[in-house]
Amino acid sequence: MPNIKRIKNFDPATLLVFGYLSYVLLGWVLLSLPWAQNQATTGLDNLFIAVSAVSTTGLVTVDPGSNYSFFGQLIILFCIQIGGIGYMTFGSFVLIAMRSKLTGARKELTKHTFSLPADFNPLQFIKVVIYFTLICEAVGALLLYLIFSFNDVDQALWTAIFHSISAFCTAGFSLFSNSFESFSNNAYLNLTIAALSYLGAIGFIVVADVWNSITGKIKNLHFSSKVILQITLYFSMAGTFLLFAFEPSIQSLMPWERLLAAFFQVMTSTTTVGFNTIPIGEISAAMIMILYFLMVFGASPSGTGGGLKSTTLAVLFASMKSTLKRRDMIRLKKRPLTQDRVQLATASLVFYLTVLFIAVTLLLLTQNHNLQVITFEAISAMGTVGLSMGLTADLTELGKVIIILLMFMGRVGIMTFGVAISSTDESREEESDNDLVI
Image: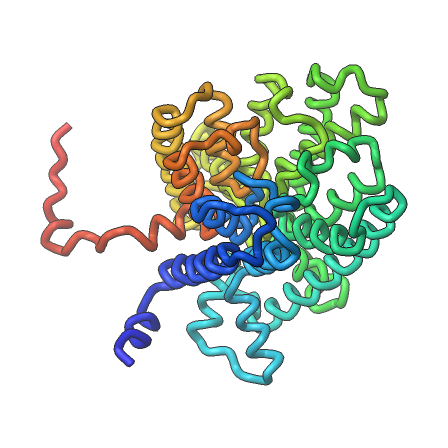
């Protein structure tokens, strides 16, 4: 059993990468089966869809609603669900249901996966994640079924289940070829999808925290939960106002329709769910910059969204503010931040920008699109957002491979991926040689 022993000795970051990779390969194989497809799909496109589903991104090179059979769509939905709640959470819940105990390694990996605070109980947390997910998706499916039935959508029940899970897991996969553009003025659908997406993206830490507060297990929300809720609210309000007031492509709509369109597009960028009710390619350059920002920092840790997370932005802003004020320590809302949190946030930003620079440069060399379109696609892939300005369908084979890597990195986490592939640290002898000539 030498291989198993070697796997057990891997650090959590490496285990996460290999874990998600195994589900990607499984999804790829199943989607490549003839009875999973309505029409022949290339192996690279099947891999692209598998990665997009497991990473809960939603970028597609082929239309899932027409290219894949019911079995294929079921495989995509399975990959989305595993990717959304985390493969370790799913496996751990199966063990709990079988009344088996979780190993120390599994508990540590769960903490690493969701970036849990030290005082969070992994066992209790896993139960909250699973039950909360099933309840939200079931209620969402019921509401969407009523909406789709009223609007005479074919296969309303299956369509409702698919989009409910896709929305909660912030996957952005749709069985409609134009996402929700046909429902742009349907407030019921817009608000249902928004509620599911926010509940998924806001993070299971906040969910567990709020539940413990309601049941009286804790008196106050944790600091992380307060910061996440506040930033999410600010992003949603400010982004909706900016698009409502300044986006030319929706100015001709009635005021309430314009507000709904602005809100939904800000919501879909902030939560990284990736649905859209207006054509993304028609949005003005100024508002695209707003969407860049929301896609990078909108989602929250331990949730189903991607990107650098809202708490990373909070730490970076606190670091800048404290430095400008010449404080002897970095504080956020009058609370001192530990050095490891500041270092992690800074390293995440630097590594993110490095990967983004390399990816955009390579895409510019291989794709016949301008900088804005390519940058949007790269940020969308790394943030597991799934929005596109039209590049996805035109990707070359090399371009597809680049986006596949970005989506996978976005799902496991930019820093987690970096740690997993990093080489060993310098030796003591090398560390002693610290005379850097300036």
